[in-house]
Length: 379
Image 1 (spheres, helix red, strand yellow):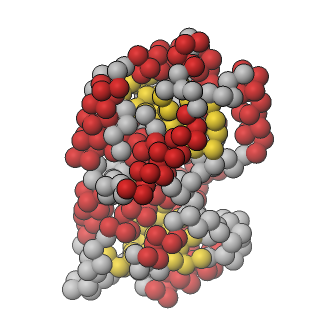
Image 2: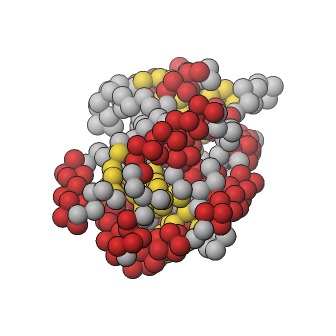
Image 3: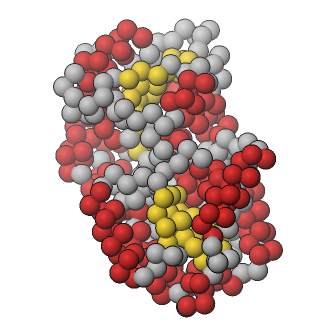
């Protein structure tokens, strides 16, 4: 246990630091900690370093536990050695596999407290993960989730977690965009907008659960006039090349390549939000989507599927439109309404959305709730 007069020593464990929502939230949390309260370090086991420079600039040590992923037989040994050597009070794991690995690595030790995190409702898709979670649930001191929907999902499939799950929504560490960022955003927009009037951004990895087909179906249903006025930019990594090829063939078959473009993940994600007129979410399931939170924070109205806790972020008629998941007809209708909304009204909706998320979901609140949990576990 930590010295009462010193900071709490916390190791944050994640698979890699790619440009995903969970990774961004980990970095937001770690960077916002007061060093006098939390002495943070980060460990990862995949060579994906998108956010590593940001952590190092904040003075946070980063440990690379191999480069072969979770199946590396030496990983558990490296992690166990790090935990014992550094004498952490808490190991806080982001995502399912890191949570399983940390509990296995800590077998035979009297500490630290293990905190695991689930960030979406897809745990039930993997039977082996569910089995492991049921076996190891009692070895975790607490679970942190970012949405009420995730809490309900976990309690349903792993009853042993009931009563030990804390809902701590994602937070935004807001800084006003610089003049350079705004100029870069304008250039990014100009490179895509062509003869259209509105640019709608989707910031998400290209994966089945994000349902890019819903966007393609909806765009295909738009009237010719509205479709000619809009460009949709999907920005995110594609880890499944075969799936990416299927999506590309679908775009070509529909003859909408001028209206829907797929771009790789970028470190300059603020340019995407600032360059767009609106943001969209087409997922079949989510917890508390970070990209939607950030898009709203940047003053962009949203068109989103009503999944997870999205309804806590988007207020229909006030900051955007909510549609049922996998409903292309309703998604197209919402996009038609977006196109018909005057520019001044869109700006007002964006302003209201920004005020709401910056008031209700600042990074400081996420940090204080997390610190409160740590103190409870160590008392």
